[in-house]
Length: 146
Image (spheres, rainbow, N blue to C red):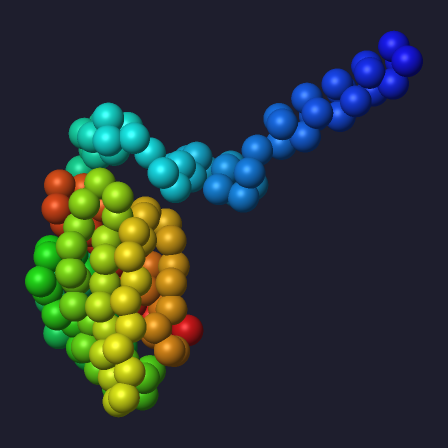
C-alpha cells in the first residue's frame, strides 16, 4: 500500500506543477498575467509595467477605417473598421485594471467584449481585436482582419 500512495503522490505533484491554461509561456516571453488578479496585483502590474508601447498609428483612429491598424485608445473612443469585416463601429467602453471592454455594432448585430487583457485577441465577426497593452486608463489596441 505504501508504494501505491507514493505513486499517487508523485502523479499529483507532477500534474500540479504543470500549471493551467492561463499559465502558458511556451514562447519564452513574459509570463501571461492571471485571469483574476487581486486589486493589489492589478495596481502593482500597472505601476511596474513601464510606459505603454508606442502604437504604430498613434491616436489616429481614422487609420483603422481602411486597413489594419494599431492605435492608442481611451474610454469612449470610437473606431470605424472596414465595413466588409461585419462591424461598422467599435466603442471602447472602459479601461480598468481588469482589462478593456469593447462594444461593437454592425448591420443587425450588437456585440460586447469585456475584460480583454494584455495579449488577448477576440473577434467580432471578421474583425480581430488584440489588446496589446493596458495602463493608466489607456490601451494600445490592434484591429485587423480575422
